Image 1 (cartoon, rainbow, N blue to C red):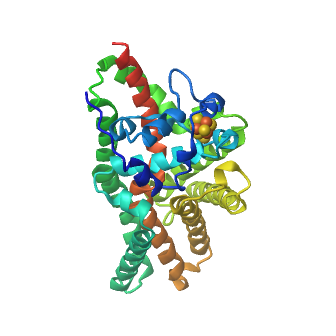
Image 2 (cartoon, helix red, strand yellow):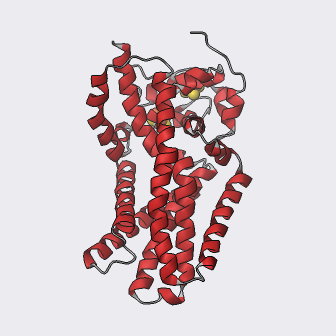
Image 3 (tube, rainbow, N blue to C red):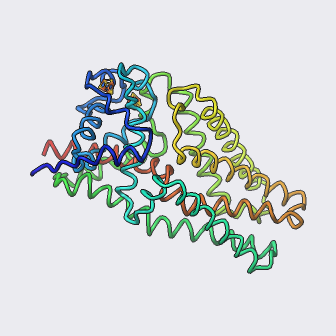
Length: 354
Ligand code: SF4
Ligand code: SF4
């Protein structure tokens, strides 16, 4: 198969993150040697840098290596050329997210701040319009909000997330014509589920246990809050157990995400030195979502919500922006793509051995 060279790949990738310091890379191999995750023939991040520098777009797009990196920042700390390979892997993940996305919106929202701001404003105005149409009646708006959450999850999952995961599968396995025995798909399923919920590979990075634990708590807190609000109707229930479950989930998320926001402001670790707008949006919106949900329930329990509908409106706007923009097109998808990448990487290995 002939290899097409795309000289613009480097320039294109620069739009998805920090400026292209990776051009400074002279391939000493330090980063690959220091990375605790380079094993079994995965020679990242150097191999990825090489593909970008040489404009090997097809090979780069079929490569799952950028998803196997957990951004511990060790490679960037030790790079003698300050090429910032850790941030390069992050930029590569943003770029690949846009490649997998069939709508093209992901690429637009990652690379154009004005488009991102306009999209957020359009959603806020639309939700305000719904409130206006319902004459700002608390019960009516809350019923709309509850149904909106269910339908948003269903539509985003079936129309965007599933097709995009399939596109990832196409680019990394099918297009490459990797022949994988059917049994390997089945055998890898348990490992896939385990990685998805625990992200256990990040424990291989040095001194990463606390960060891994923080992420784990947030993932389970997020899933619990989603389950409590969407399926157990947290805002309408009178069941004490469900009410406290929601309080715990919401509280845990906003406390932990607040810590993430502080770390990004302080820039005290290698991984926090550079923050793309999508990084800020992800942590701030996760925080706002949990914090406003927590406050809404407090206002319900203290009979203050009917006179303070603005709080529920703010919560609904945050939820809508999160569900329609950040989940399908932003950093939230990294969580899914990474889990699938581990699955696909294992399939590729069995495919090579057929
Ligand atoms: S350590 Fe720096 S210069 Fe060396 S291969 Fe990695 S990115 Fe390139
Ligand atoms: S950031 Fe960490 S996990 Fe990612 S390539 Fe560098 S050393 Fe490896």
